Image 1 (tube, one colour):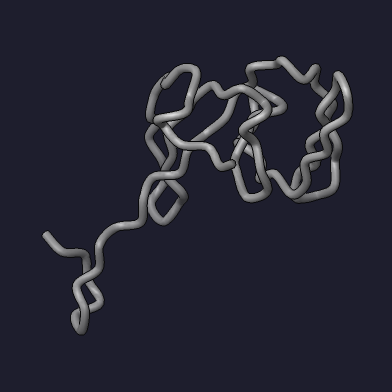
Image 2 (tube, one colour):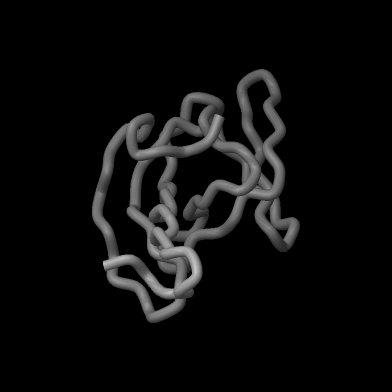
Length: 99
């Protein structure tokens, strides 16, 4: 399953982003919804990390980020996550954003 605004436990805010950076909405999700490619915040003061692997054990779920750092959570946890904004609609043949 992947993270969406619809399956979020809470939708928090939409922080401003730098030009050409990935825009996202900060959310909370049950850890069971995480899958590779999703964004989550293991450390609040940093930018979100990309999930590269999820392993489910009896009472624990481990999540690895894109650098291979592994974090362990109880299986019932609600964690800080992010949902990427959809890509803009590009107009064919013009290479620009449709207004």
